[in-house]
Image 1 (cartoon, rainbow, N blue to C red):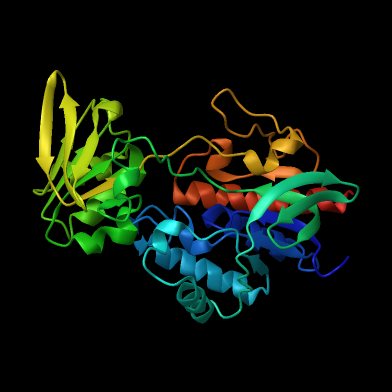
Image 2 (cartoon, one colour; image 1 turned 120 degrees about the horizontal axis):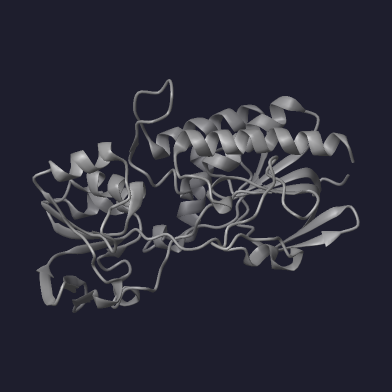
Length: 338
């Protein structure tokens, strides 16, 4: 096997992918494993405080990912950078960011080598990146759910000018300001609770009649003096406006057009799974668009497994960790038999 090739390629190095790597390595440290992605650009790294991990009272998402990365580093696993999110590079020279990454993660081989396509090969699968071709015997897809962008009027015009897709990443920049956060679920609830530490007033616009978050989060939101929740807001009615930067937002509440004067808008919507890099493999999907898996998290394509929210798992840290971990074990069992 050449230096470029591996036994297992894990696409996505967030909480699920890291857990899969740790499990696979611990079960068989003789196998070569590569992870593609930037851990601290994962959904977990963008979360605020996480309180539902057994044995850990409370931890900030990015700190938890940092600990997992350090654990993976100690196992001498290899990282290959899948992408750097452009929204975290605004106004900062790329070389500066890359140098900062190397300083924080000196053992990692960061190459800015984005995965473009995955296809079948004689020995398993061929991963095509921007700079190289890598052969692997097996794959775990753990890329999570992408952010839903380009859905709100004015969103594209004001990105980096008051519009953000990560409350945890950029919330501190709006200290003392009035902001809106748009979305549903635990992710947006955590984002709003994080923003309350910095922002003077937060309006949460929910497109459904239920925020669909844990009751513990809902209680905190409803008792926060600087947070107000608006339900059943039609996303198509929302319009962000301003001159050089965000100055306000309009939306329809029932039959009335409301207008808010504000400084920032956080759009925390999740999209359907993006399977474009594996489109050539013809992986079966569920009606909802998630990867369809068997009991051992294998797909209809021999050697390809999926873990985490990409296959429809609940977005809870312990669930994603467990799903990634058991998938790593399942892949090792598969590799023993080929």
